[in-house]
Length: 167
Picture 1 (cartoon, rainbow, N blue to C red):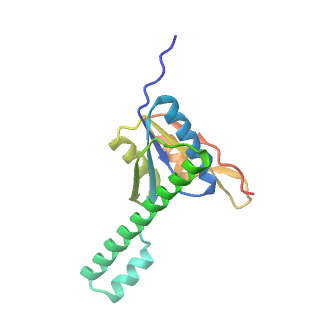
Picture 2 (picture 1 turned 45 degrees about the vertical axis):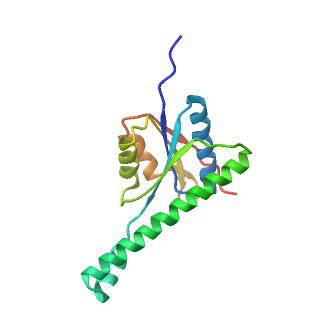
Picture 3 (picture 1 turned 135 degrees about the vertical axis):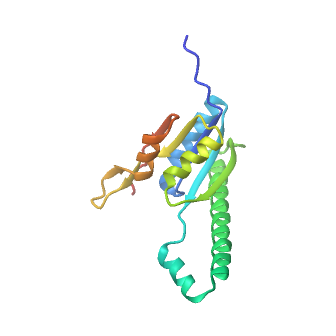
């Protein structure tokens, strides 16, 4: 008999939305099967160059940096609250007492795939669960850039879960 792979930590990467619920449910199912914990991670893009340029035009460098840091922290905190609410909604929808999410991580970065892989490495995750697709201009499913890059560069198994079609 082949031994079951050792999976103690699953990183669930999310962009938060209705289309991600089946992806999250797959991560929960795997975590229960392996008796693993789930780390939820969401990557927030940094302020764009036009916003930074506007701030630099009207504020001193010190004030602009302070506002940028405070604003980014508020954004990260807000996203963390949304992820917590998402988790609680799933607990209620499943009618269960616990979902094995042990940590919610929100980071900022220009390249979500790099941040996802960095967080997975920092937390010694043995698996990444991520949604597979995004929609093209012609409403057909294509593999999203983030999913494609995570799959290509990940040294650990990646489970790509199809997102259901929009209705």
